[in-house]
Image 1 (tube, rainbow, N blue to C red):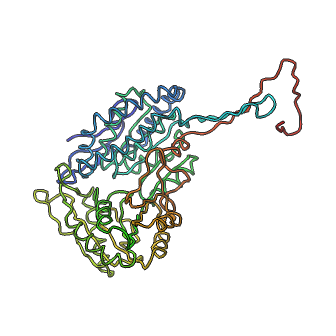
Image 2: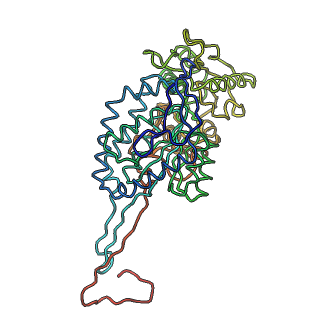
Image 3: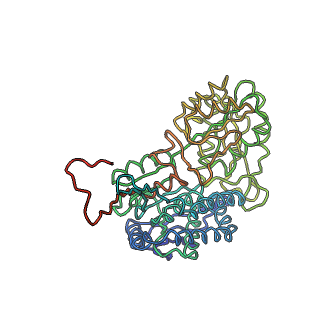
Length: 498
């Protein structure tokens, strides 16, 4: 049995961990490894290593940091296949989907390669007689990331490249469900020339999370996960004086107007709802069909859902793999059941899916429920699985009201050929990320990712320019070099410019 270890101070280590947890192969249902579960002392060791490394890394040149990021970027390209297959084996998503998340994460590394420009300050000459003013940003110190199972490469890459390029050192607590990719990235950082202790990985559960949140040596915490845990992380970490960005759950809506190309819209909705078995924070889980679009759209969605090829992630040609655990499969099935019990119409029911040769795998097929109302459990809850619900609206204004009444505000989309309707939608919806004829509007790395309402706790989005601001703090300097004759006299009144 393979044991997945922590990575602390530049080397794999068991630390003081005595507890383990199984790492499953979702396609077969078999246990493939055990991951060590960190105790508080393991987190202490990682933070101590990071604090020691910060003494020199925080003073390193921007050029040196950028060169490490350039090399890391190349190593991510060279090891893309290995990383993708590791993700597929532990998460269950198909290999091509795993490659996609590596590419999107690598874009953040590419942004970090330009850290020299991202950290440029401002300078004002002669702002007052003989006085100049300028500002610059400095790293915080030791920072931490707590990341979810659904993107074991991409979401951590939203955090640590920016943090490290800004001069911080980093402690990552990845999901214990698919932990191996984080250790591989640690090895790539070492090969890229990153000094020992700058990047550390501790695996574990709530014990490790609480140790990170409470540790006085951690200056900031980045989190992505469910809304209840995001709120918990934000409250507990801010109570101990930390800077926090905590991204929570989602119930992403896609509004389809009657003038949209319904075949095209249905194709995109199908991919956005069932890609990665719906286990994406940006998955479309609600289609809001407006007016006469509904009766035409639902049959097309049903046909496309039935055509999704489900099977092991390593098998070429499959569109969708299993969900992450047996418990996740049963949870999704329970919401299909509750939706129909509460009056929804199951136009496609994926609960009976069997994959030949993988009967013990965690598979459940795509499901589509029509005539869902906003008071049903299947609508109010983040299901996080291959389940698309259709809510009907009379017009665009009602559709916008439905989106805005939902407590989540992560991502949304509108499908239309009407520019005025699209502009009205994007200005009125209370959502952080919006797609116009784009179902999964994840911003490029030179923008920043983040939602509104219960999808974000804290006021800073992740990666991009807001990531740089989150992982640094500003200094403003006002300087004067007096003449030898000291012609400028000190004054007891509050200083003014002149």
